[in-house]
Length: 80
Length: 190
Image (tube, rainbow over all chains, first blue to last red; front, top):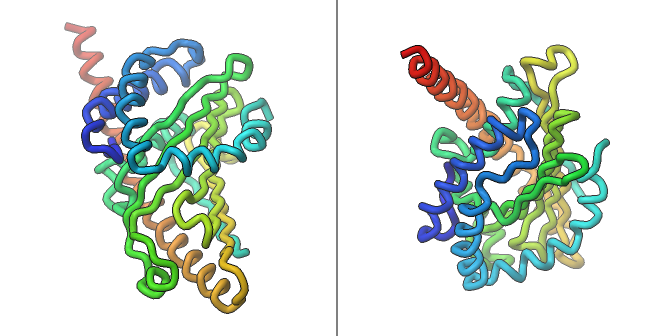
């Protein structure tokens, strides 16, 4: 797995990524799209990550770029 | 604006490619070393369509041409925002990314798709990549052209390395997955 931008989040990120990949290949791709096995790990990872994104000022860059998302979602988040 | 596009076919099923894609930038990929971190920002499954939507932050550390640094300042660390959609029913991965750093100078919009090939849909996957690169610095067309040309050049180098690196990840994924399955089968039998 790849590293996190924040070294202190590497452990929890690794655990989350491993959980996600297992869920993705064993459940999601086989049609079980509603389960969310990794929610708890993701929430811990996000808590760790968000703190660092804020410190580095990346959160405000993200806020700006997300303004274009509704267009993107309209195009891709539905069945084509 | 300049457009860079490329296509290729991987000799792996769409399922394998779409799973390995999540770890494209792991240590198995020794070609895309400019990517130093990949963080997941959000993830959700649309209850109606089953489409998986993921936001990621990709952090790159790469040598920027010296003349670019001296013109625009800044550091060599840059961030890319990526939003992706996986549609498991129609078997399509779409990834759209844009640069967060240097966004006042340069706008890079990349769209990548992975879909089963029409010739051998069960075992080969088509990769499509298109990037639109626009220099935003006001005024001098000559500088804009130069910035765009340098960016396209860098983009195409990274794309080539990315493809080679991803091949390595696909190969390792298949091997590891095969070994895992063997172990599980052994366990079941014993």
